[in-house]
Image 1: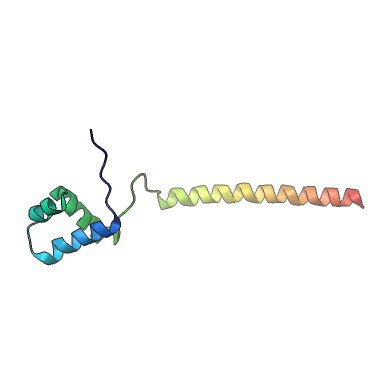
Image 2: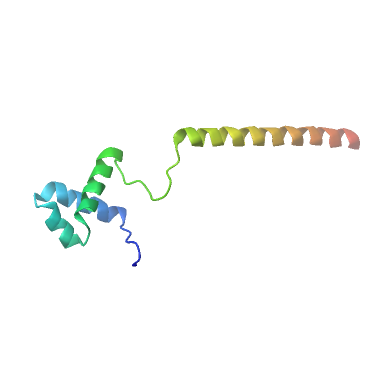
Length: 95
């Protein structure tokens, strides 16, 4: 089994532009570019839907990210409060 092909953002944009502007069949363009025809359609759909190409891997959900950040903020706030109390205690002890 071969290595998975990765294409740059510029290559994908150029391929989609060729598909839209050249008027040539997608199968012909895909053959010339050395990619499957359905991948060319997939890139066009992604560009249409998102305005860019999403990265590989799991995409973080906005709600999940917000929950994670709130949890982290609560933890950091608690740590800060503990450090403030400790600093006040030791400052009083030195006086």
